[in-house]
Image 1: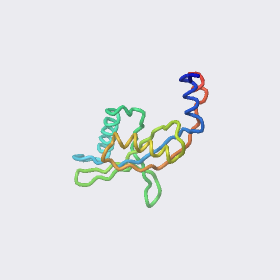
Image 2: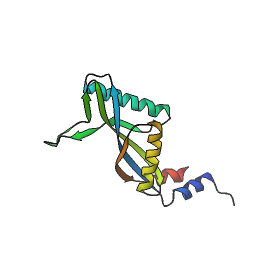
Image 3: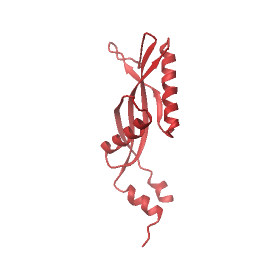
Image 4: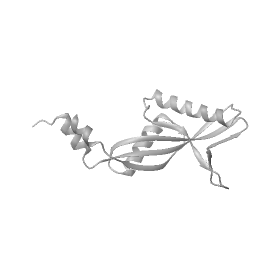
Length: 138
């Protein structure tokens, strides 16, 4: 008995979940004079490196951190001596993972492969609804 592609996808997807994984990245930008410029360069460079490795599905946004005094959010960027350290938020959707830990490993592998030598830390993993109707239509 031969299994169709539709049946194979259904069997592979059984017992697995989809996740949205958010990671924080530390991006170094040289030769900048203002934080806004550093943030723009960091987002642009990260997006370019992800696109070059066919990872257009990874969302890149400026990171945000809370003020230690009042808790108000502000851009995660520090500028000294025309060099900036910019915090970036990277989000990726992971499909058919066995667990949160599995989704984390997949996300780190996907993003880390494109952004070599960039420190990454997973900050949030959220299980998302599966798209069972679309899988049964294939």
